[in-house]
Image (cartoon, rainbow over all chains, first blue to last red; front, side):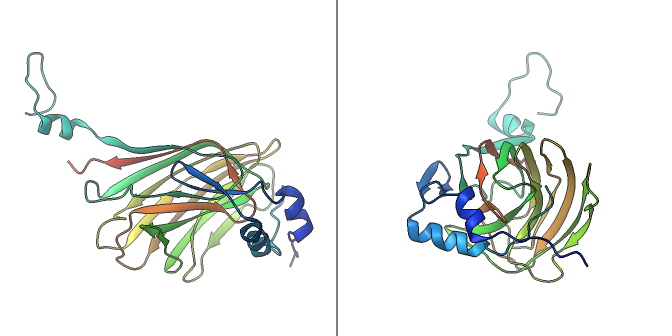
Length: 52
Length: 186
């Protein structure tokens, strides 16, 4: 079985620095706090990378 | 008054309501670098079935999965999603079938990509006291690849939903417009 590469925290932080990620509810957009951003990054560490 | 109308007919509100097949419920311009996009208060008793078109958007990660959760008010449901489907990629050998294999915490809607993505899906009975079903056929492209995807599934409880949330399995979504249409019940 082919083992796929996974996203690291460093890669995710480089792709989405703190202060650049938001949430949108209807027409309202809110930038994530540093705590929310860190938890969001954590939730994606280890996600398999699909072939580009 | 019976359709088709003729010159000189006097149309009532009932006639006009009946003549609208697909009615725009909401149109939302989507911002940049979003972890989640929530569309609220779009499903109600006016329509049984809906079509959602999200076009001209991109994901920050190549071939990112795009996922959906149904919501009631401001609360997302995070269980009871069952789905299956297939993906064909233009250049890759990773085409194939996919499925939830049991209760999932989201509907898998397919893939999006860094160059161009579009997602069109239908929701059946989201605001009725019945199971909510969906079917979708998104398409996405990078500079070197293209995807064609089909997904369908069911939310196996009779929760009456009022909105939904879209998000990528990794990274963010950016741009485009999300339009929700209701199918006229007639």
